[in-house]
Image: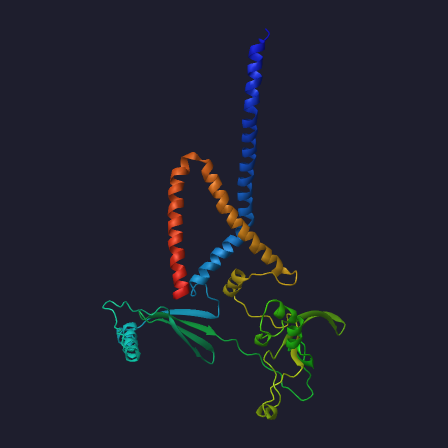
Length: 348
């Protein structure tokens, strides 16, 4: 049975109107699918970094957690008789008010009835022993604290030296050569001082960074490092110094050593904390350079997780109400904490 021309035209018009809506729905479906997939797979890929930053942040916040094998921590609580021997915060506040009052001209100053005087940080000190070093950390408000004992490594036995013994690259060889590295550096950027109206006389260059390079020693390829062993300005002789001769000698004094010959003693805790704070792109494309890429990816991932999470929440209508409440509460708490931390960091 044939369709009437009228019904056919109506059907074509309805399809034409519905076609853009279907196309829009299909595009949104594809976009939502990609958001969910990137959210999921980026989270899986960056999981080691998420765990690292979370766990190492715990170590920063709690310095007594997961100490290395050479370190032991022992908590203590001082007896009331010992606490009484310490100066209290209120006592120090009263003494400071009395001292300041004597210096004020015409103004009065007195301590408040409820002064709420407290020590804002823990006090600490250390004792160096023969076999171990001891650090004392004390909260002077409560008299509680902890002792951190760190055992010392037995110093390696030094070979008996003789006049004929030659220094080695493992130990480091002192090298001196004619070069005024600081003046050379300053001269290379002299145009910047004039360009930006800077006082060149107030420029104080730091020591040059270490130089690493490949070399061949006894027929074997090695990696050497040249470091500046005298970063301070060189003076003349003691006699010249007495005469006021303080000109810098044009000599670079450095130490040449074998890279990797004297590795640092690093515990698991120290390694994790160093990983947490490692940042910036080095000048060499080594593992540290790729770690910097991971840090940037971590930044992008965390921002994307937050934004994509909001997108996915909005798509589920039944969760919008409680989501609004949580977002509002989060915004209020975050703003309050940001204001409070800004005050603490600028005035604390």
